[in-house]
Length: 509
Image (cartoon, rainbow, N blue to C red; front, side, top):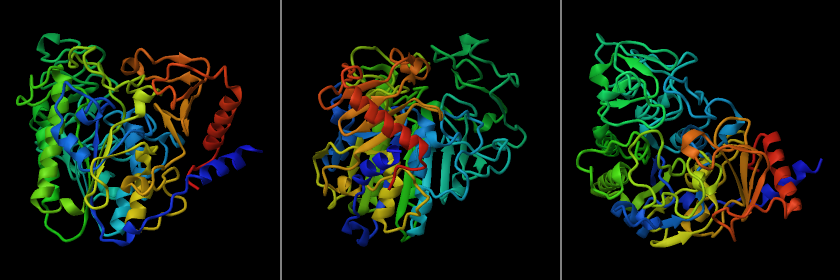
């Protein structure tokens, strides 16, 4: 009986008032959601062996957050939570990494971040990685009109890849159709059985220009083995080396579209997800191999997008946020990671992408908004990208329906520096609906017992954890001293809070 009152009391302290910025002119909004960028991967977060001039400048002109998180330690559930404002462990669809032919995981009619901003008069667009499924129950029709798609959940414009660079089909989707598809060469995709006659990494390793270290041995596209099989669509297939340039050009195209309405761009570059095959301009540009080169290519991409905003004279009225969908990982299935031990991808944090330790979900987060966010500042406020819907609804003065964005909090005062605090608690998971979950409450971190990793990406911290864990991050940010046995009362308190949150339908008051 005490669980719901406990939850309501603790959540009640998280209610954050709106600020007067909602009454001001609506800013343009650009959210750059990078892929697999770790807490220690940028110069402004301590990296010394890669050059991230554009992102370092963004931090110098805005605020760098040190306790920002992705709601999941893997991509699909983070992206779904960012768009819907709900933790992805609440429903099956979109709770785990989706295959490249998955049906859409956010149903049309769902209140989403772009649909909220459309209500405020924004022109909305997405460019880059999607990985939230496409099409109806049977998945997308690659050779026809692809529907539902981002265009059916609030975006006016969409240029995306369906999933990830290591998954088929290796094509771009422009609005509702595969770009450059020859109707005489239709696309077929399977994640169950081999199809077509294309060579595979398993059968024809001599054709690979990038070797795999785990999996990634199905259809070879552009000399790289992928997850899954595809045939057809030869004219539509991407060249990995050109992907960053393609997405940058499409983002700039969206930004240069004429019109007086404010815009919202969700820019989701593929960098630095595997396969890391940077453009020839960046090969060898860092001492960290392909992974370091990919970081510098990502920084260049960000620089070009920000330059387009400046060229239009819109920087002063544009809120730019850069963050990552989960923590960094070194070897994620290809020999594309460079020398180990020379660069701490997640800084001093324990764990990687695919784990519930801080390295799996504490991520870089930079916000710049001239005149609203003080330059060169740093914030230790606890925030999460699941908070975007509530925050931007408050920013644009759009009412948030009571049943929408159930886990999203308005963190606008923390973004603008009006408050040094934001959330008092937050949840994280790796994937799926069964857990385990991790809970932050103040400086305390609780990890439920159960499997807390996701394959090789999480090694060596993946695996079954027979007992729950408890850490005081205020004293032990690297999670080296498990206090579960020493502080049983605190352990029970956090377990009860987690149980109540799972039993309920929301954490937002």
